[in-house]
Image (cartoon, rainbow, N blue to C red):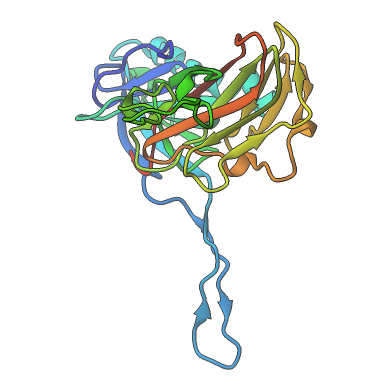
Amino acid sequence: MATNHQPLADWQFDIDGVTIGHGTPVLVEDVQGLGTPNKRTSEAPIPGEDGSYPGRDLLGPRTLRLTAGIRTPGDPGAALDLFADLERAADSDTRLTPGATAILRIKRPGQLVRCQFGRVISAEAASLARALYGWLPIEVVFSGLDPAWYSDTTSGVTLSLDVSPSRRQGFTAPVRTPVTCGSADPKSRPGWAINEGSRRTWPTLRITGPVVSPRVWVEGATGAVLDFPTLVLGAGEWIDIETRPGTRTVLRNGLGSAAGALSRTSRLDQFTIPPGRSEIRWDAVDSTNTARLTVTWRNAYTSL
């Protein structure tokens, strides 16, 4: 499933809808913050011994600082207009909406566009001394809420409840040889989710009724189970489940929270799709076989 963004050329940046970089009047000189984000370490001294005990280290948010210059020879007004576009990105309504994020997109040679979700913190003009000649040095700061980089497009699968004979338990007498069980080709099953990145990614899920007591899991992934034992959805009703850090919600029909319907053993923070190919499964009660599960995700990467 593609996301509607304008295409970028190599060495171009899209800062919440404003394109800068190669081939534009805004020349990017440097980008800081592309390495490993700061870590929140939890090392503890070993009592009575040298050294320390390694605890759990967590990555902080990724802050990117872009140093650039706006070049519009003989047209200082155009330089100031371009800078105003960046200022508007930092002063958009996103900053007033809890949970809302801006997007920073980058295209480097040899790969598709990757993006960060966060906030445009500031757009500053370093000096106006040379603006008269159409040259305006600037600095833009973007704070990503997640240390991962994501693909610019989303992938997804939509699954009905599987009522095929291969999913039913037991055998029907009389039993004759040869006895076969399940699909001969596992790759033909519809629930494969492929994360082409290098780190786990957080999916978005929608369950559409009519359905009772849905349960979703990632086959073989420890903790990747979402169970709603008391949930009842009528025809035309749905729940949306967001698992990404900082935006974890369970909404019913786009309005009220349905997080209370989750079982105590269900963990949104553990429901991830690991790198490579995984199988997403679900079961529920639906006499009409019209309930659907839709799962979407972005490939996630450790680095740009």
